[in-house]
Length: 239
Image 1: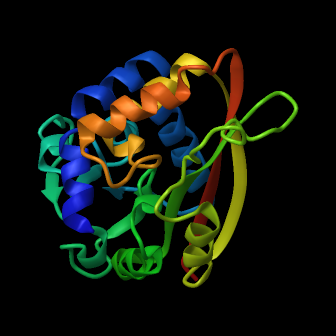
Image 2: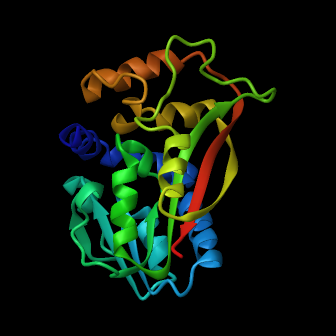
């Protein structure tokens, strides 16, 4: 599974950056998550950006913290980061000493692993007393009347792990606060999101990167208009 995730994101750098340049979505998520973590934790001098991707979220956290470390399973994604130290690794075995961070952020990453509880236990190990962990997970896209955009399509856009499971994982280790963020988005933006090979895997996980992107394009070609994209946020504090 980890090799598949790594390969998906190694193949996604250019498409990921294209989506971010158009929408600014991951920057917005990181800024909102950083604000929620800052309001509930103590001093966030040292932050681990877990699942840093190309460094969009890393740059946000580096604006506020003295030491921000970017961790990702994809070496190709990490090559794009210049704003912070980079560490290649996975969430199940975080290569850091106990109590070495004030905050751990999973901006748009924890829903990509099959067992988020393992990653959350590792995050808890790394945190100082009073430390804070934050995570964001997608809830999907809906039309103006609240209908799931994928309701009439032959495929649903599903994460490896649902937002409920991500929330439950944090609740097992922390006292949590949760909420939902909503963003206006267009059919073109939704198609661009699924042109990222790692995100097209939400629709066609068993196909190659090129094949799944092509199939996603065909599936979503008929969509028109504007939608609402929803993301669940969860912030936990150590006791």
